[in-house]
Figure (spheres, rainbow, N blue to C red):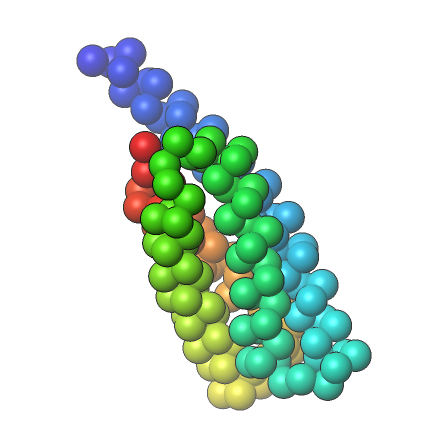
Length: 136
């Protein structure tokens, strides 16, 4: 029993680490698109977040399916449907967080984005993806 628990803990830590690498790469892509949307295209922080979050999600799904959770045995359509629901929830939470920090607390939109990304990615995205979207 003790050995099994160690394996479960090790697997959780390994998948968490991989998820953070995936989130970092998706987040880097997301933040780049977010910056382009604001600085080049002149969009608001909220619209930029919706666009960048959606595109970053494509990167994140691909990395998570094939590497982080190695979950290619499940039907891609079913996983994608669940993933889209998680992304909608995530973007909604992030957009509300950015709105609160930028409009009500007058924080810089870039710092706001970073703060919200970290909180939602660790507290919502990883758990939903590991235990629901890519569950084995």
